[in-house]
Structures are given as C-alpha cells and as structure tokens.
Length: 155
Ligand SMILES: [Zn+2]
Image 1 (spheres, protein in one colour):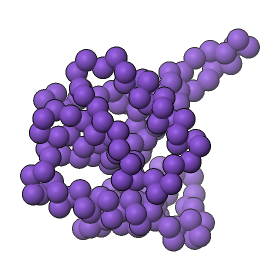
Image 2 (image 1 turned 90 degrees about the horizontal axis):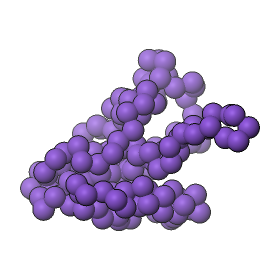
Image 3 (image 1 turned 180 degrees about the vertical axis):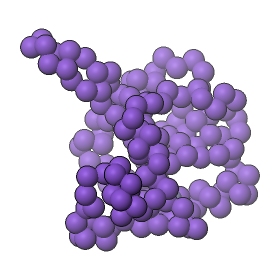
Image 4 (image 1 turned 90 degrees about the vertical axis):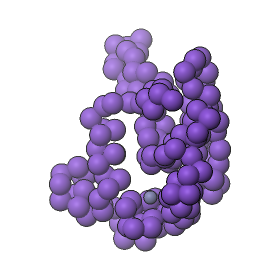
C-alpha cells in the first residue's frame, strides 16, 4: 500500500512534534523546541513506553504503545506511528482580514494494516467534548479519500 496515502500536515510545528516524540521534555527544552518544561504535576502524568522510545502524555498511552510494539513484532500489522498530525480545517482569512491558523488533530497512533486499512487510534481514556469535535472533523476531512480505507478506534 501507499504508505503516504493519508494527509499529513508538514508544517514546522509538526516536525517539532515528530522530533519531540523521541526526546524527553527537558531535552526538547534544551534544544529550543519548546518554551519551558511543564509543571512537575503535569510531568508526573507523562510516561515512557517500552525501550523508553517515546515520552507519552499518559501511562495509558504508553501502555498502548508498548502493546502495539509487541503486535508489530508479531506481524499483526505493517507498522505504526505515534503523534501524527492531520489538518482538520485549513487556515483562512476571516471577514475582518485576520489570518486564522489551521486546526490540527494529533492522532496518538496511526496503524497501517496488511489489508491496506489505516487505523487512526486515540488513547483517550475518556472522550472530552473537544476531542469529540476534533474526531468528527477528522472523519469529515478524510471522507473523500479514495486511496485508503480508514477506521477510527479508541484504545
Ligand atoms: Zn511509545
């Protein structure tokens, strides 16, 4: 299958996100990628997955990632990626002439299955109202895709 059949946002910010997935928050701060480290209260929620490869936003997300790594090694699917940005609404100029930035949804996991299906998975323990809106917009933005069959799951 075409590994690039889903639309990714290739902005400077998304590159930062990609790079940051492989470093700790402290390292990201030292590299000048983020403004300042989050509070210790927030930090305590973060957790590394197996091999310490990524620093995930929650222990649950890290557990899902570790499980996906095992499944990938077992050949259950082709591959998966973490923190994949999608543009769910393009940037535009408002009626007052103000430039409004695009709206992005960062998928926790994008899993490419052997049958060509692309699974977009979110590790939210509980779906917030904001998440529900973004999730709906994501499905809308992909509705005309002819290259991939998408499925959306909550892990
Ligand atoms: Zn991970």
